[in-house]
Each structure stands twice: as structure tokens, then as C-alpha cells.
Image (cartoon, rainbow, N blue to C red; front, side, top):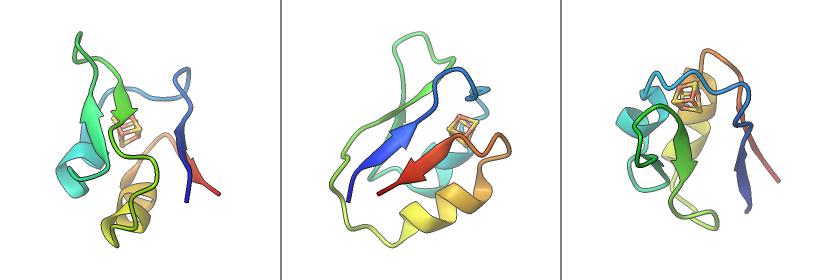
Length: 60
Ligand code: SF4
């Protein structure tokens, strides 16, 4: 599974990091989320996708 965050759409709310810290973390500036482990099979990835208010997370 590949997870992608649309940088332009991400508003840095940290919901994905709180929901699924195995897969997501904040960048060095703390204003955007980045994918920490793109091939994770963590169940919480789907929860993070649902939790993202910007619909910035996709997986394939
Ligand atoms: S939940 Fe969405 S908008 Fe919020 S930090 Fe994560 S990717 Fe960005």
C-alpha cells in the first residue's frame, strides 16, 4: 500500500498523526503532515483518511 499526502491540501491539523502515528508524522516545521511509513498495513490508516478534514490523504 502506498500512502500519499497532498501537500497543497494539508492544513497541518495533525489529525492523521494523532489517529495513526505509525504511518504519519509532522514535518520539521510542524505545518504539514508527511508519510512516515508508506507501506504500512496499519489499520488506522483508513481512520486517518476519514479523519482528515482536507481529504488530503490517499492510498493505492
Ligand atoms: S489530517 Fe489531513 S490536513 Fe490534517 S495534518 Fe493530516 S493530512 Fe494534513
